Image 1 (tube, helix red, strand yellow):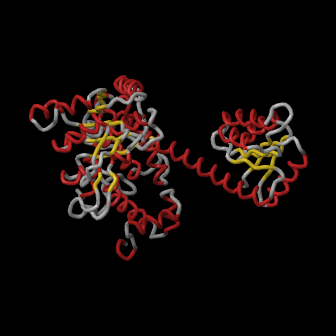
Image 2 (image 1 turned 120 degrees about the horizontal axis):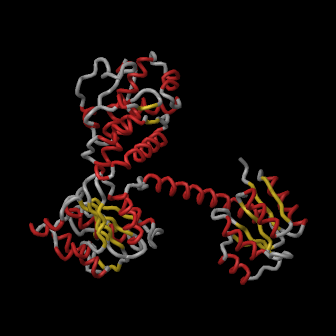
Image 3 (image 1 turned 30 degrees about the horizontal axis):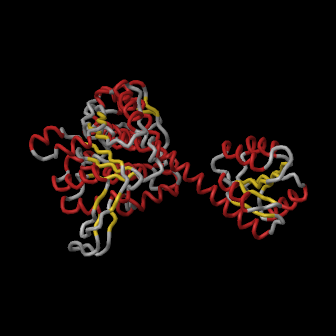
Length: 467
């Protein structure tokens, strides 16, 4: 689709000149002779770019610019003037103009501006779309009273700079709470930097958090900027902070108290402006009694405590979570969307989810992949949930012919582990069923043929090896 450009100018000669230049380059052009008419066109047609004259009778260009900036966020507005002054250009830029061009208009100058403006709008639109997708991926789903308490805590804590300690069992969604606090805070435009303290060895965590200088230890071949510096003007999320060593805890305490740090191998003090959010699935007060967690750090972190309930405490949220995860998986993996019957939802609601939301998500993804048909029913859901699910055959829903009764992939706890086994087995079964006809198989599983070819390459599936 051709980019559409609106020209708002009271001079017909200027409108016609721009129309001729732009249409010759393949753009679609709309015209308005007054500011009022231009505003109405923007509201109705949503152009990709606006050329706006400054000096017009009635509503002048700067008034129009102010009004348009409230109507459209991503549409670039190029201000045009035959009476250009530095003050006018500065004021137009302050009000949000993308560029400022003086009359008479030079074709080359116009086209460079148009290309830059259209590219900028595309990037802004893509970024906005990416942010929406990211927000959906990290969305907190559910309306239960226990979750309402979490949302209330987020709303109260987010606008402040107070440190937050999120606690709850593994898999309940502590990261989502941390991201929501950052997203609704005054630091939302800064970085959100996540550190899993349990996943980094003790000998490396200080370097990860605070950075190091070249040659500060064996293997330090370059300077490294630490996570706290990366999070400057933003938020750092210290996940599983209960697994951090006492030595590192002392240094984190200093950053919290003084907002300063030193890289390993350096004596230079670096000031940082960082908000700290921490999370744990451990009882830190018990850890204090055992001498494995610093009491002073605990009180520094525990300014705003937020408890995230286990899934068994919010069973009424399970149907909404199931639909959310099924839709996300179908969209991300180009799968046909599937529905869950009321009986299936009730069975899922009654399951004991030891791994909380993380386990539920993995189980839903597995159901979407492995269940034939468009609806998932209670009979497709085994007692015992994730740990009891087997690979169904094309017809009966029983384990696939020839498949061992207990395969390693049945106990996969992540989608990545599961896909490497069960999705491969599923695809092989469908290919065999359709005589290794790629087009027919792609049609049966409702996926583009190009996507199926990618899967065959990804899992190294071939008729010679798997036929």
